[in-house]
Image 1: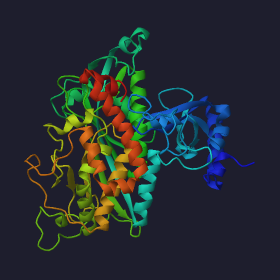
Image 2 (image 1 turned 120 degrees about the vertical axis):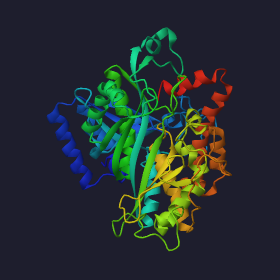
Image 3 (image 1 turned 45 degrees about the vertical axis):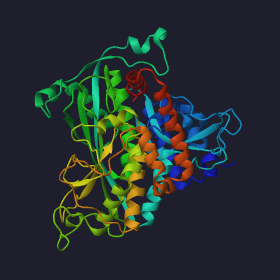
Image 4 (image 1 turned 135 degrees about the horizontal axis):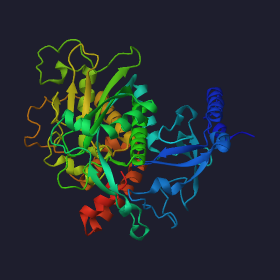
Length: 492
């Protein structure tokens, strides 16, 4: 009798070799538990811990997962009426809190460095009939990359991730059963450095103990960490990662974000990827996505130009970018408003766009300009020529963030769009401002038929219902600050 992996069409000779190698590794290492994890629509990992003796069965036949996990808003409330007739009529394969199956990818195996005898596997959800769950966000990026590859291109990404680390003073508020709530409270915290002194070496030394945990965790997991830096805000830091292919970058972001939170927590620290922690004097955190395209035929950076276009100035995209690169840039600009909700998906994150330094406010691009939405980095002949998108928040789902770039950029390439001149005044009044709220960004997505078609109307409807469920609860909340403190800071 065939296994579930075979019925899905996922199991072949290569996967069988990977399964056998993994089972041998787990046995020889004395691993007792293996966490089978899946990334939800909010970018958080969910999963189950499988005992080692049952791992082979899970690798071949998957493990059950309640389907409502894919229907949760940011507080873990189900955004669809799964027990009412018609409540999931636009969600084929869902309803009545039925089961999906998580099928692990054996090549993703990691031994978790902060605990003994525990391994980790990435998985994706499948319907019980062996068909793909199209709402899975990793699947969304897979489809976008397939479309990009059909155009003869691939994507390369580097990550700059700002976040906050605090020292836990007391966790009684979070763990007192008499204070349990939905969502609950964060622990009582203190800062690891006082801030307002960018890259100060003394503050870096003060923050070294938790940063060394971040370093060791990332390196033990094989993540391409380049540097750890002190950001401007109190207790704010940044991790920079080297360039990889797009899917690896997205997978790395999910793993890094969740791993450092767990590793730091075990040592008495609290990492938050919330854009704006709930304290009076903080600096917003961004996730700056560096991206370039590679020609599959030539293996070279397709954004690079060898010499400036005739008659161009430094304010022209063709002075730095290839024709294809300019088209891609123009596509990102055209869909800047529509893509914003995939780059900044929380209510909290939109506070960053309102009067904060080094955060974009308008749909503009600039040459090495950190105030613009898109920063073009590099020069003619530079193999590192790239575009940095600065509208992301560190809480974003990376699969959706990257997929939005691909779909927007491809529209520019397919339409041979031309970019306007670069800005030298990114905070001057502009006719096209970025959305400043979750509600406005959802409307901007609805009003972008190209992105809706590229992601698929069913997926956009699904995503919007989840986000509107979150937004409606925020609008009904009496204390908006308390809502954000519990909804985001206690969880992200």
